[in-house]
Image (cartoon, rainbow, N blue to C red; front, side, top):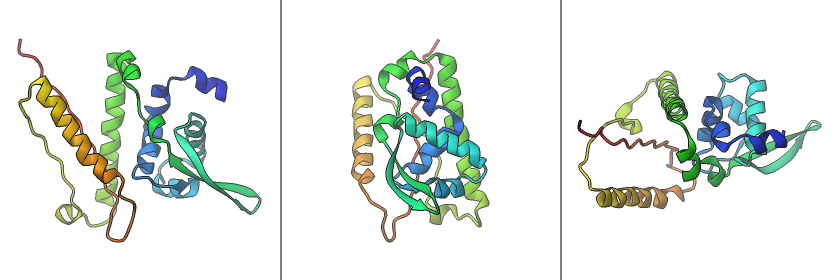
Length: 184
């Protein structure tokens, strides 16, 4: 399998819809066994899930954090290798418009599926749970835009270090930044 991974671009590894869901499950510095992951992604067949986890581990996206013997087999606990779980600027630049369209579609489809699961999990309380979705437009020069993205990164970075704890709930924050089309 390692030979296959050498030939496979990390974009091909990461941009598969099921593998994107697996990566999202680990966000927030979570450590999960495949059994725990299977419980969260209960609509993914077990054999398929194990193959995707193995591929992500072989690609260095998931790391084995612990192993323990259970009835003659080894249960592995995985964590996310953040650097390997994102595409670099060179990979993004090399992608075709069709590949970007497929990647964005998988991203949005994952968000829709997560939202549907949230709604189906009981009686949702959008206000209590802090759920939000909105769209805004801002007018920024290129310099102002760089400052804006740096400000966002600073806000996120200071909170990414938060560990799970009493009163803390894991929240997934997704953002999309799109430029408006140039005027004709």
